Length: 213
Image 1: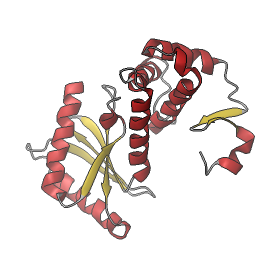
Image 2 (image 1 turned 60 degrees about the vertical axis):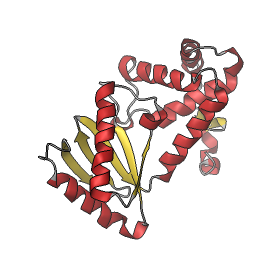
Image 3 (image 1 turned 180 degrees about the horizontal axis):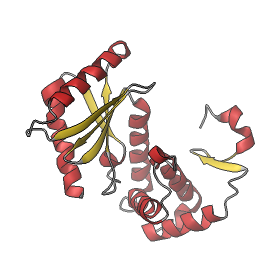
Image 4 (image 1 turned 30 degrees about the horizontal axis):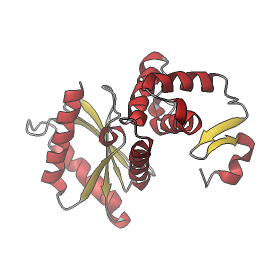
């Protein structure tokens, strides 16, 4: 399955070179971070001027749909979701792909987590811990999946980072991180507190700090 994801990713690069080689297209999320699961999807974002974003999204959707039966690209089930954040969804080599536009927040999150992993060190302990905890949350506890109203991957990554901030000196492997994760959050006061990039926050104060976190 992981090999299929890599093949799909390179197929996507070929597609983009064919239909829009003058645009800036970047991968973000778990694939470039190398924390993806076998059942994960691929996230791409197209950087373009906002004034042509809608027309470009429709144009790319039409081009992808026109190649749904082209064996050269192996793309199918193309969907254009015309919402505030415009997204193209499709399957490439039967791997789910989401294509967004000007998703700077996703690119910033990728750079932030990559830098955090470098600072943590210990043979990419942060990334290895994210993979293990994502696996437990997705396959064992079934609580991961923003599309289904469950916890998002980025929210989970912030929870893992919080564990590192508190217990970094005693964390020597992914299993130790998973243990601290389960032990700490099993007794966390979720009714009155939450966790953001800056640490624990009071839910009652969210209106005052939502812009900061």
